[in-house]
Length: 246
Image (cartoon, rainbow, N blue to C red; front, side):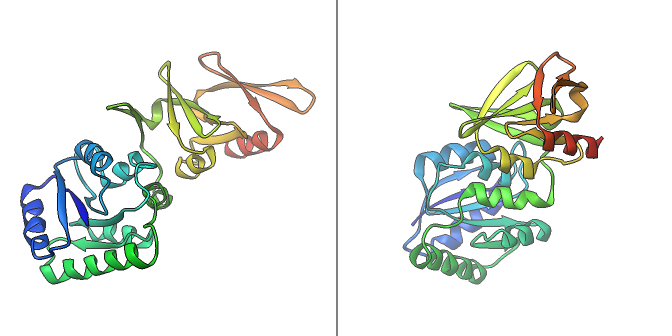
C-alpha cells in the first residue's frame, strides 16, 4: 500500500516513518509538512493510506480533505493529532482510525489493521468530501478553499456576497470576483453559518449582511437587491426563511 504522511512537525513524521518501516507491505510515497504540499502529493500519488494531522498552519486537515474531493476514490484516512477533540470528531465521521499523539507502534498496528480491513473487505473508504462535510456539521465554515490549477484561493467567509448554483458547481461571488468550485448548493448550505447565510432560492444563498432591500417584483415574486446592485430572485420559501432570520 502506498502511504502519504502529512504533519507539520518533523519529529512526528520521523516517528511514523520508523514505525511504518516494520510493515513490509507499506511504501511511503511522500511526506508533507503542510496542507498545500499534501494536496499536491495526494493528487500525484493517489495513496491507499493518508496519515493526516489536523492542526497545521495554512490549511488544517479537514480543509485538505475538502480540496481533495474528487481526487481520490479509494483512500483510507487515518487522522493523527495531539487533540482528542479532533480525534473524536474524526472517529465520528467514519475515518478509518485516529492516532492520538504520542502513540506507539502497537497502536499504529491496530490502525493499519483497520485500514487493511476497510480497503480489502468493505470497498472504498469514505470519500474525502464526505469526511470533511460531515465533520463540519459541528462547526460553521470560516473560509472557503477553491482550487484553480496549481493555485488555491482562500476566501474568508465574511467576504462572500452570495453563492449561485451552476450545474455541478457553485459560484462564490466575493470582493468583485467569482470562484467556481465543484460542490452542490445543498452541501454548502449545511456547512454555512445559518445566522449569516440564507437560501433565498433553489439556486441562490445570500449573505444577509449584503442585502440592501427586498422588493416585490411581481405577484408572489420578490427580488433581493444587494449593496453592490446585484439582483437575486427570492422564492416564496426563501422569503419565509429570510423573514425568519431577519
